[in-house]
Length: 92
Image 1 (cartoon, one colour):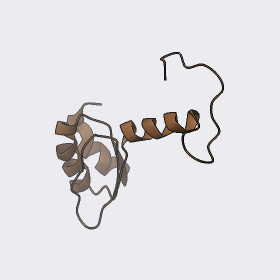
Image 2 (image 1 turned 90 degrees about the horizontal axis):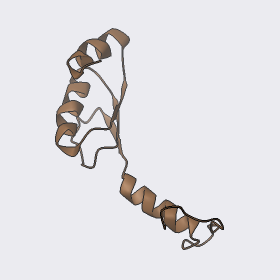
Image 3 (image 1 turned 135 degrees about the horizontal axis):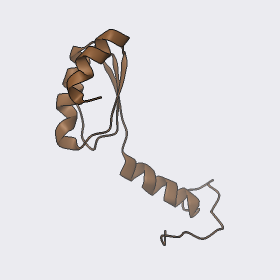
Image 4 (image 1 turned 135 degrees about the vertical axis):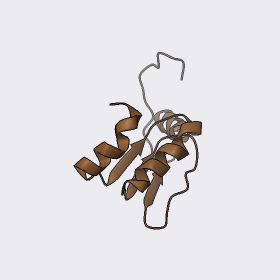
């Protein structure tokens, strides 16, 4: 589906939740299009903070931060986490 079909698809299928996984510079325009179509919740994986209307909920994910926390937990650097005892192929 091309992005030109977003409005038609959202309206035809009564879409209420959108997941954004585009580069930062494209995220706000996509978010605006989704909310204009009636989407009420946005799960944002783009590396930017989005502005949404008051009646729309948003959850911003930070993949870099999540990866850093995951690596620290695997190395046992976070209290209560179990250290990974295997080897890491990428030198983590």
